[in-house]
Length: 264
Image (cartoon, rainbow, N blue to C red):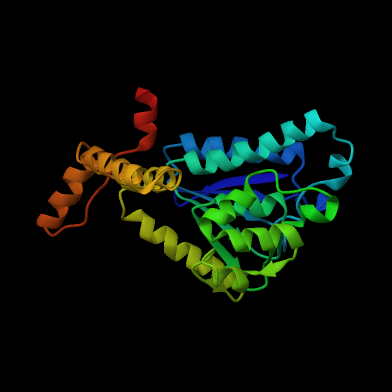
């Protein structure tokens, strides 16, 4: 159902359940969350990549299961999905989604929560919940409104329309799209190579700062950034990065967020 592996300090979480079209069953959601926790804690992992082994990402919710849910069970299901969204945003490592083909319902919501999204031009996205008398339950309506704007969020949620990656690119959801899976993987590798020479501590601090700043007013966000900037000056990576620049050599960053979490 979930395949995971480490390659060049990147942790790949691959959805691989062809029998049910990678639908987000309770078991699938639990497996995704567990894999994210593993990627978060492992010091051999710098970046997490979520993708699919199939020609599509996920067809969304398992309607044959959800039709049997009562209100209490639906709340538990929504919480499982929201825990994944929150975990992606809490992890102080870049989380990248690589998407081809259909990415519907809750899987669209999970992808939207990722820090970077790489998609092929033929990828299709949609909040199809309205077709079943439902609305998004993992946080997708809120995330897309924050990443783009209210009008787009309402249009996609109200209509359930499937839109392609190029459509969402125009609204800033993606920086670029790729013609096929091979081109996507090539560009993923280029991004991973860029991370290799960067301070993972600084990236984690920046991720936390940006995410927290989005949840508050501008003046408070400035204070959050100021405090994070000050924290960076207490790191070994700050000393190493500036020293390497002055000495005209490549920096050797070593600070790990996992070490700070262990101190807690």
